[in-house]
Image (cartoon, rainbow, N blue to C red; front, side, top):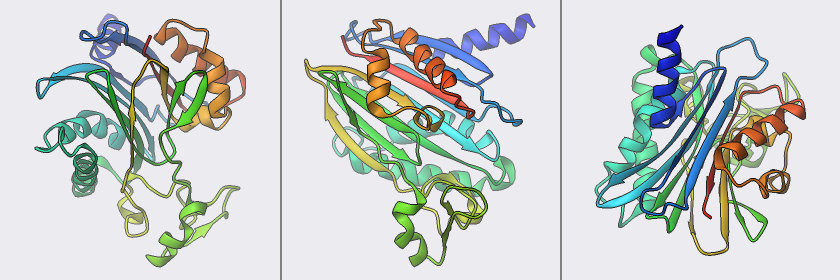
Length: 283
């Protein structure tokens, strides 16, 4: 038991974690007013926790980088755990990361997906969504995503979505052009080939011919009006709108408390999915 608690503390310290309930925090050394906190809660499903977070500041390429991500797995936790361990390394290893950041992130997403598909025997047949945010020197924020985990930035009290929810119904033409189909059967939500409720994801080799891993990428400059950033899995967004999430924490000063407050609010609204949340405070 002591060893397990120590492992959880070590995971929280370096900024990545997954268990029934985890929380952690950190701050920028360059801009001490920029802080982050995260909180995860396991859902009511019978399977093990499939959400993972990554949240830490790191010196790289002679710059300070804030690296934040939510990975929401399906059909197992091996793929999101692999993403947590490798995706940012692949992004930062891109030679043109600082000069051509958007294209570097796109390449790294594709490279990582190819690595996962090559390791199907080891990692299993499952997959994962991802939303990543890279804060460069506290000034430039680059968000990328595949799937339905979401990134929201708050400026002057107003929510702005930086990611794109990749829903099968919105990408029906692309899926059908590849020979796939979108169906609400079985269940009550559109699914790729009647199986997966997102149109883009890492892994899922059996669906890959119809499933994209192409990320949407957005760049946002941090200015005096920028208050905070929220990254969260769909366990939060199924029960809260962007504006409701912003309003929920706009008076909370501590980033970790804000992340925990959001997950608790989602639970109070009867969310049954795994819920993971990162909040980055800029002031």
